[in-house]
Length: 551
Image 1 (tube, rainbow, N blue to C red):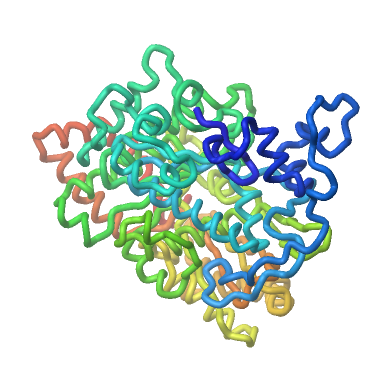
Image 2 (cartoon, rainbow, N blue to C red):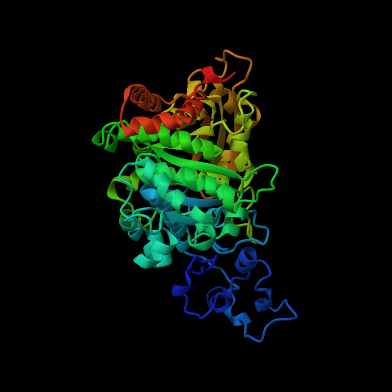
């Protein structure tokens, strides 16, 4: 398994050095804060702090960067099309010793998951190459990542394989293939049951590919605040293998003596009403229902994305990601941009302070932990529902922006409309949600004005209004809770609103459910029988969607 520098993410094959220590000296000897932040005291002796330093020459003062890192002007902000330039001094590598715990370990499963994680990594590297301070959002946000697939050809075309790892086909077989030695490495052909079988085969007879084979360090997974599975539920690998792999992470990687398990979330692309779904008839609909139901038992929360809605949002949310058109399939280049922007904002949500010594970058405000995005909702499930049967919370995603320089109640209503109605990243009805978690962020001069409307409850009242969450419309005794957080992000021009709405009705999923139910009730095929075997999980998930199912 290839060793990798956790500062620049270069593999051993890319080092002009014989060891990690030599690489640190040559490439990062002038960046003591980054070395200390990433490797702690492991290389402290390189900077003359350890009495028992080995007999090896460390970098002298002349190799240190004592001046301004400068760098070219920053490009657009998160989802922006014309953001302000990065402040001088401190570049992307100047990370504080007080760096907060890294947020995500990303696992991209199947073709869609591989493409999306690729896009995240290219976004991170785009920011880093341009010495933009916001690169540190991902430096502090990623504890690690890995790509898994059953299709070797798809893996070979990834940025991860070609640029970051420089893997050959044989390297990929041992480091990234699901079902090694159990199939022909050409995908699962829309059959989720096959995807599940080959994933199970990797763990047969006590095997643990996380430990023995896959290019993912178990300790990095344990150290992350949360794990994010990234996949689709349209085809066989993402749909079938992801729930198995998620279960195996809990069983083989995470500590089994925790009082509360580490959070596992799923960013999942669900079938759209048009496009490829129509090309394969009902298979994608059935896979969508089954895949969501099965991952809802393995993960704590699901974030569903729909290509139709990503396409609409891509006209407004356009973060710069260099080389995306080279490594993502052409039809997904624009679609993945708002998805990456949503994940980038989520990554900021529990990183309240990233400040270098010169205070050139500060993210500050009210933030929340990963678990805050879904734990509150779990309390609203029936008390007699067994924890093992309780489905994951559905976090319907939205991301909007306000270009106006005038901040007032009217413009905040426009921001809410742009977020919840125009830039929904999936098909959902906001007025049926159990509540939601929102984060407003932007430059300091605008957020000073926004903050007043957050503090006095005006923005929360807007979100609770009939046009949006319609929080007064509840049948039971439970309330519709709306959480509003705020962050100052100094390098943006516009104000953005990020949101997740809890367990809303999703019309496109309901049509898929109806199709699958007819097949389950009337079909006499193997597909129908497979449906019958997992139907309890399907009913568990779908019975919790919509406010009418909130007690």
